[in-house]
Image 1 (cartoon, protein in one colour):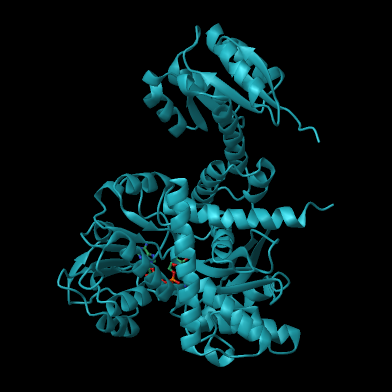
Image 2 (tube, rainbow, N blue to C red; image 1 turned 60 degrees about the horizontal axis):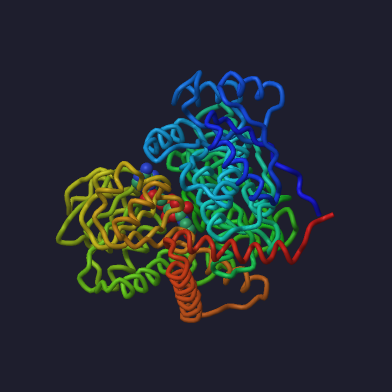
Amino acid sequence: MPQRPIRVLLVEDNPIHARLIQRLLAEAGDPPFEWEGADRLSAALERLDQAPPQVVLLDLVLPDSQEMETFERIRAAAPDIPVVILTGVDDVRLAARIVEAGAQDYLIKTQIDSQRLSRAIHYAIELMRARSAEWDSPMLRLAQQQFLKAAQIMDLDFNLRKRLLFPDRTQVVTFPFRQDEYGQVETVFGYRVQHLLTMGPTKGGIRYHQDVSLGEVAALAMWMTWKCALMQLPFGGAKGGVRIDPTSLSRPELQRLTRRYTSEIITTIGPERDIPAPDMGTDEQVMAWIMDTYSQQMGHAVPAVVTGKPVVLGGSLGRKEATGRGLVYLVVEAAKHIGLDLEGASAVVQGFGNVGSNTARFLAQEGVRIVAVSDATTGIYNPAGLEVQALLEYVAEHRFLKGYSEGDEVSNEELLELPCDILVPAAIQNQITQHNAERIQCRIVAEGANGPTSLEADEILGQRDIFVLPDILGNAGGVTVSYFEWVQDTQNLMWSLEEINQRLHQIARGAFQRTLARAQRDQVDMRTAALIEGIERVQQAKLSRGLFP
Ligand code: NAD
């Protein structure tokens, strides 16, 4: 079937360069490119006005405009059209600055071939489309850029690339909520996003946090898709969220909020449709309330509607600690791979909730010295090692780490830069960035949190030979045991803890080995390798199901 051509505006005053690019555009071909040329800024602005292209290829130095000004004037005239900068080797820094200022990509003229040119154009168009969508947010941009990077490397079909960049289904709800002590009724925002409906029911946690947004939930849902596919689970990715600070709520308030949110999304969830689980700010008790609210409406108990619920309601043994346990299974594999002896090694753990505290506990069981931990209130550092059991007891009593006296107080920023063998971000996103990646002092970054590392930081960690267990692999133990829980609920059977841990271990090790083999074979970092593994499976599923109608 013929492909619709992509319209390109080529702004280039050097006729030799212009002819070269035109030849490459003609060669690149599927879908074909149609181009118009402009040899000065004034002509380019006229073309943008009369017949807007889908992408601009822009030389920065023109007879009537120079450098940043050239880009700024094009951007001002056509804010929604993606721009790829054409630059000489000498001007790469300027081009990179212009990409930071909003251009989508740059190409070095002497290094362009038809494939690079075609990829850059497609990448720029997809990136721009993503930015103008309802879900746009820094976190979704990170998820999309990671996906596009992997898609480029694996040469993913362009139709699928466009399709997978956005969630399949999105629900935004607002609902009333009254606190215990005050008469006012607040309006609360809630979300449920299903990224992929192709591979079975959708699966993903529910987050309660004051910063939750549609874009954040969409990013988390996309990561769930790759995570489930990487672990070879029969689910698509989903995520939910409520924009509220749960630490400010009493238990009755939390219960009312949960029940109302559940009833708002009740037609979206279900054991064969979409199965929530705990995430940041939610726990077993919240899952029990969701199950109860759903079951009340159905007229009978439906344990399989959520996972991560109490064992007595059909929860799975080992689910509560599964994310931490899975992460430590992977740390053991990573340590073997890089030749690190865990006995006597040191670890720093950011976040002391479900994932962080269990990771610390299981690392300590492997002989690792936990030298620092933190939560939203403070960080505690003791190079001689912290007693994990004492920390757990302190938090059980005081809710937070603040005030724990067996170490020095450090901020969360300082904590990330402490010397250690294993650094475990297990709290929130965007913690390791270009601003601190150079100062991180560890051999393994084991990601318990979702999205803790920026794209730029990934590059820096890679250059510094720091081994990264990326989130979609590192924290996949949670969804894996959630899958076991769902299987047990739907079949009314009960596995022993030993059986669960054994199966988890087997799946985690298999995923680690596949990811490592892919990273070595394709010469890519572990994150990109894990993404490619997941995306490839989704690609096969999508192509097998075909297009409706
Ligand atoms: P949780 O609510 O149990 O704990 C979160 C912890 O992070 C708390 O100690 C909290 O005080 C701390 N925290 C919050 N904001 C912080 C900040 N700005 N700086 C430092 N610490 C901060 O949540 P959780 O379930 O442990 O989830 C933690 C991370 O792991 C999240 O990114 C979540 O998406 C991810 N995750 C969780 C699961 C799971 O099974 N619970 C599974 C996969 C991934």
